[in-house]
Every structure is written in C-alpha cells, then in structure tokens.
Length: 506
Image 1 (spheres, rainbow, N blue to C red):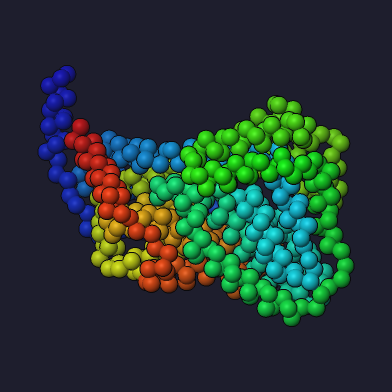
Image 2: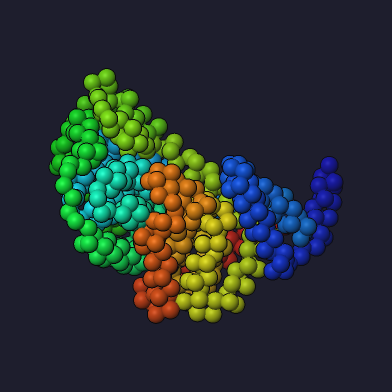
C-alpha cells in the first residue's frame, strides 16, 4: 500500500505543469461572462451555481495545465482563509444592524432625518435625507424602497417637479450611504477582499465619494431653484414618522451611544469586531430597558434580524405599514449569509485561477498595459465596470477585480486601499445606472422611473469614476506603501505562492 502511494506521488511529480498563455488565462473569465450573462441575467438562474460552474470550467483548464484537484482545493482554502477575519466582520455587521433596529437607534435616526424635509428644496432634501438614512441603515435598496418611495410620492403630487431628477437624487444619496456606512455589506466586502481595514477603506473612499456628493448637491441646488415652492403636506413622510414614533421611545442620549461607540472606536483605531460587539451589546440593552422588548426578542433580532411582528398587537402603522416594514425588517447575522455565500463561490473561482497560474498571467499582462498609477486605476475601473456589466452581481464585481489586481498594486508600491476604493467606484456605485443589472431593475421598479431617465441625474454614481481617474493621474489622494509595508506585503504574496507550490508537490 505504501509503495502504491509513493508510486502515485512520483507519477504526479513527473506530470508536467504548463504555464498558461494570456488567451488560456482569459478563457475562464470569458466563460464566466457567458454563464453569468445567459444564466443569471437572461434566464434568472441563481448566481451562486453560475459561479461554481465557472470554477469547474477553470478547474478543467487547471487540470489540463497539469494541476491536481488537491492543488486547486488547497489554493481555494488559502484564499478563503486569508479573508476569513474580514468575513467575521460581515457577520458582526449583521448582528449590529439587528441590534440597532430593535434598540431604536436606526429608527430614531430615520425619524429625525425625515423631520428636516423641506418642500422648497425637494431635490436637495431627497439627496441628503436618503444619504443620511442609507448611512444609518447601510442599505441602498432599503433606503430607496422606503424614504425614496416617499419622496417619489411627494414628487408625483407637485407641479413643476421632475420625478426623474428626484429619482436621481434618491439614487445618489442611497449609494453615498451604501459606500460610507460601516453597516454596508458591500463596503465590508470590498475591504475584506483587498484586506484593508474597514475604517481606513471608508476614509479613503471620501476622496472620490465626497466630491461626487458635492457635485450632486450643486446640481440639485441649481435645478431646484427653478422649481416653485409647493404647498401641501408631505403625507407619506408624516405617516412613516407617526408610525415610527408610536413604535419606539426616543431617548436621544441612550440611543446615540451605540453610534458614538462606533465613531470613537474608529477614531481611536480600535479592533473592528470588539467595537461592533460592544455597540451591539449596548443597543440590546436599549432594546430591553428603553424599548421594553423581551430579552428573547433582542437576541432573535441579533441572529435573524428585527421584525415588526416583535412590536406586538398594539402597534398600528396604518397606511404606512408597507413602508415601515420595508424599513425596519432587516439585520441579523443570517442576513449576511447570502453575501458570504457568493463571496465563497467567487473566491473558489479566483482560487482555481490562482492555482492554474492564470491569475498571474492576467495580472502581468495588466501590469504591462498599466505603466503608471493613473493607467492602473483606469484598468481597475474598466475591469470593475465590465464585471458588473457582464455578471450583474455587485459582490462578484468586488471580489474578482479585488483578487485579480491586489498583487499589481502591492508590486507598484500602492496601498491596497486604492484598489478597494476603485472597485467600489466602478462596481458598487456604477450598478444602478445600468438598466440590465439587478440594481437598475430594482430602482426602476421601486421608484417608477426608467433607468435611462434618472441616470443622468444620479451624478454621484458616475462622477466617482471621473474623480478616481483624475486622482490616479495627478497623484492626489493616492495612498503609497512605505518600504517596510511593501516588503511585508510582498513577503505575504511570496508565502502564498510558496504554500500553493508546496500543496502542488504534496
């Protein structure tokens, strides 16, 4: 038996391993585009099996190049292990959202955000309030589906107001919050896949996102000044606020403490998970002591998310029932499982690419094209846009470019936070202005405005790409690695390659 194993091992070692050409390296990427385009977009099949099929196809090519199944599995395990700490942050974010919901923190922030609505400046108000709600909730879709719908209802009843502009303002505000909220799944995933600290990633995003918000603000101010100030009550907003105030108790000091814990922890650069767990614990305390929920409900909200069913029979939201449910029914660790699943599937595909050498072939080719920081940023933006345009999946558009291009940034002496920012500028935020993507279809269905009508007014979604390109070529807002940091990250890359080579020999 021992001789048989030694013989098999010897035969395996004698099997030649070929290096892929660029064409062979790109075949799995092209196959992914076909499967995601036809299966996910055209036929509506789940994206996870489509990614697994592309991983299988990539595995066949890797086997043809001389790599064994064990080689591929070892590399996939290495990829997943490298981002596992950040994946735990995603799960913690789910718990945080659930606790902030049942503790009343998010409902209170939404309530007071809606209070600042001014009919005279509807476009700007829609932009800023949606941004506030999105930052507080960490969900662009939830913000558009609640306060966004409320603003569209207001717009439809006002003479002289262009609903397409309101929709553009809502989309811009929603995706501003989606990018700059520590509760956002996509923001956490972008930081995780590039192995960048979450708060460092968010701070670096300000270089492109804040100027884009300023541009959006100016556009909404200019076009808004041409609209006559309407009269009449903002009925839907009032209904939502009345429902929220009847469901929760507004103890401003206590309910803001979970937010302050996150902010102070961020400023002091404390470890992310302990800070979030402390905030979660305090929010659960608020849920039991301030909001009078049971301990069981508090823990259920952390695990499975908050539900308006927990409010009891005495809660009557009236006409705002659907809007309030869409706003409040979210959070929980379970809510992050779908994001983790698609990330694992995409990492499996990236792991096989890395094992076959295709990843290095693609990266080396990109490095030849990108002979400057600006051109590398542009390559990243184009890769992100092409990925989201072909796969129509926001998570995939973050994972694949992040895995493919991270070594290129490190070798160029650029901090990976430049990469994490660029993949968000081209993937997360570009998705809602493409009509055939899930986000584009959702916005059209939710706000009732065709994508091509609101897209020009969703300035935040496309100006980020412009600012990213300008900063790339001018060097403004580009974070460089110190010599020590670069040596450390290069050593980690070498260790990953060495482990992959060792796995291939075992």
